[in-house]
Amino acid sequence: MLGDLVLTHDMIVEGVHFLPGDPPADIAWKLAAVNLSDLAAKGAAPLGMLLGYSLGSGAWNGAFIEGLRQAIDAFGTPLLGGDTVAVPHHAPRSFGLTAIGRAPAGGAPNRSGARAGDALFVTGTIGDAGLGLELARAGEDGTAPVRAYRRPVPLLAEGRALAPQVHAMMDVSDGLLIDALRMAEASGLSVTIDLARVPRSEAARAFAGDDRAARLAAATAGDDHALLFAASEAAVAASGVAAARVGGFAAGQGLGLMDDGGEIPLPGRLGYLHA
Image (cartoon, rainbow, N blue to C red):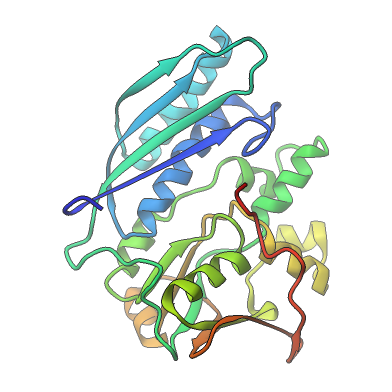
């Protein structure tokens, strides 16, 4: 933060954050959305964006810019400027975007404010984007999970409504389990998650089933960009935001995992780890 301004910067790289065959308009949308999701997690109102752009072919550029225009219109966040650069032919495309927002009057929540006894909540559904990536790799197109992977929606209004009510908040970008553990570690607490409570969409259940393996896959997948927050039941009710209680915080450290009424071992991979 800088005064009452909230600034965030994310990059996406071909072959890491998006597939070479993804539509360029969707790539532009996703670039804007993932940055605006960081503002949403701070309860910030977006003011504008700065774009770092690696030039491609004329047709590809045109489709990318159209997708960016769609995101600008959808989220009411103007492009203020940025820079372009030429890259060697066949080099992976990479893009960076800085989003600028204004913090809420009461201050922006961070991930380190959770308190022992707080419940852990998440908005929306979990695992759709990870499933969508798998389907896109297999050549599927037009399904709800693929749309969730390619065109996430930053929960800006929900973030502003929640910010005065929560003790800690972040977005789910690397996976529910790993991001919940990061919130617990930042807050000096332990966190327990009940897999049976993790909300999943009907489309995800239809494609992947609803056994424990499917629930674990959803909870360790990234790119959901749901809001994850620590608060009381009364505070969530006061916010008016629909959310699912998936766990809670207590004194101690580490992550505990429940399913079918009992404790289960942690998976070998909790989510996406940045190299």
